Length: 251
Image 1 (cartoon, rainbow, N blue to C red):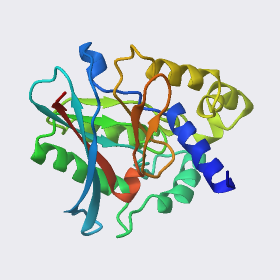
Image 2 (image 1 turned 45 degrees about the vertical axis):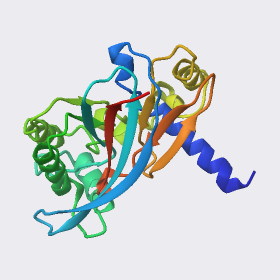
Image 3 (image 1 turned 45 degrees about the horizontal axis):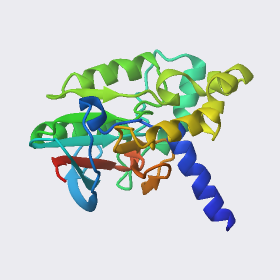
């Protein structure tokens, strides 16, 4: 196996550790189902203070036994929005200044200006729920949290938000020895991630789909075990990427 393949596999396993362990709603309904997925892509133009930009939306259909009707879920992860504030501490301001230029899309629009377009997209297209897979904000600064509350309050549908490492703490906190012990050991393959894989892929598991993030690139593969479970890893939301999951009934 090449070094690149080894690295890709490691990153995929890390994605499981950051996983938005979903999901397939099937599990929540207590049904049994069979995932049957097909994929496609669409591009839509967004606008913001920074000008026009393109959304890169990957579409996936999952067919589940016992489901009546159709449901559409918008999955967005790793937007790393930064709202700069004059009230930030010296340490916060230095961190924001260093990282702010990192989270622009190809058209030069910062992530915090892209996110309202995703809210508009969700509302105008009538998606049934928005799934947020972590690192939506780059740090839990007061300015970022106020902005996030305002944005989420404009959604017309339910949303589910899973914290990533950036949503709840600062780099200078989780990169300490105590932080590494509390958090970082959870993003590498270990007993916890092996247990997650085992439960997810068990023959009697209700899970039909796992949505993950953290690694900033799109990937579509299966988690192997007693059965195969589809895993979709979302590309970086800061680059205008999202996944649209269509849930339908099926055999």
